[in-house]
Amino acid sequence: MKIVCVIPAYNEEKNITKVVSDVLPYVGEAIVIDDHSHDKTSPLATAAGATVLRHIINRGQGASLQTGNEYALKNGADIIVHFDADDQFLAKEIPDMVKPIIEGRADIVFGSRFLGKETNFPFSKKYIIMPLAQLFSRTFLGVKLSDPQNGFRAMSRKAAENITIDNRQMAHASEIQVKAFKQKLKIAEVPITVIYHHFGQKLSGGFIVIRDLLISKIIK
Image (cartoon, rainbow, N blue to C red; front, side):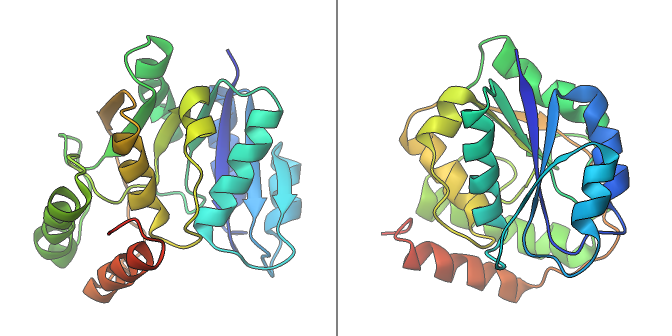
């Protein structure tokens, strides 16, 4: 069974070598999508052992994930893992993420920061932003998951073939969840660890996600 890790990256020269090196022991191939970085992300990722695809313009994280999915499917991937390039996730948790798919219990697995593992949330994110996002996802999107916005996920070949990521920006995380529920895929959640190195998300970011979901007609 071929497990591939797709890593979208934009100006991540400080982290990409470590991230690729950490991921490779757990997957058959690491695919870095360089979203038109202006630094050394591409050569460093290549040197670390990744397959590197480079966008000729900056297209956004959602578009990068779709590029990675399409390449992985064309090259025989059975399971695709999405993993951020900023060194917030732990590669050693990849086996936990893919296990439900390997065992046939899930078509798609979402990582969750709210199922028991410790995450160094800032106060506003933990007690204001995330509860509001959870309420919105349940009420307006029909998504009943503990974590409404998480970039660590695993998709079976079936899920990746049936979910096209249309939103280029940050709303892609909600889009993937909505499409998984609408298509009645077998869904699982797995507790993960997230280590925040900086705290940039504001409440305004949630409104941008809602706007993008409206534009893409995910919310009707």
